[in-house]
Amino acid sequence: MDAEEIRQQIETEYHARQDKYGWRLLYSPWANTESAKLAFVGLNPGGTQDQPDHSQLSFENGSAYVCESWAGSLAGRSPLQKQVCSLFEILGSDPADVLAGNLIPFRSKNWEGLTDKIGAIEFGINLWKRILENASPAIIVTMGTLPRSSVFRVLGVENARWESAKYGKQKLWLGDGLLNGKAVKTIGLPHLSRFKLFSRQDSCEKFEQFIQHDFTEDFL
Image (tube, rainbow, N blue to C red):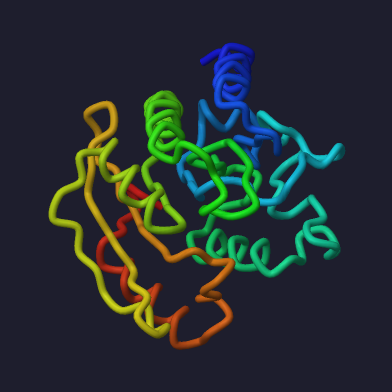
C-alpha cells in the first residue's frame, strides 16, 4: 500500500471538507501496515491544531503512545498513553509493533465539533478497510463505540458478546470476524481517556478473564 497515495487521499478529503484543525492517521510506523499482528483503532485526533513535532501520516520512531509528549506530560506519561500501553502489555505486544491509529483522521475539539460526521465516518471506514486488509492482523482492538461498530461492519462481525467491564455501565465486547478469508478477533473497549479501565484492578482482572478463553496461541 502506497503511503503517499493515502496521504494525498486524506489531504484531498480534508480540503474538500474545509476542516481547519489538521489531521492525523497513524501513531505507529507505516511499515506496520504490512506486518502488524495487533491493530488498535481509536476515534479521531483531538485538539485545535497539528503539533509541529507530531507526525500526520505515521509515526516512524516507534509508538507515539510511548515516545510523544501529550497534553504537557512527559513522553508516554499522559493518562491515555499509560492506559493504551497497559493494554498492549496485557496482550503481550511491543507498542512499536502495533498498527495504531484513528478511524477518522480529521481533528476536532470534540466529537460534537466535527462537521459532516456521516461523511467522515464513511471516509474512515473505507480507508481502514484498505489498511486492515493490507495488514491482515489477527487481533483488532477498538476504543469507543463508533470505532467498534465501524470495524465490526468491515469484518462482518455478527453475534458479538459482551460483559461488564466492572466500570459503571461500561462493557467489553468480543467479536469474530473475517479478514482476507482469515479469522480475526475483535475487542471493543470504551474510550480509555474517559474510562481508565487499566487503572482499576477489578477492570484489569475482568478484561484478562474476558479474553482468556477466546485467545489461543494462534492469535497471540
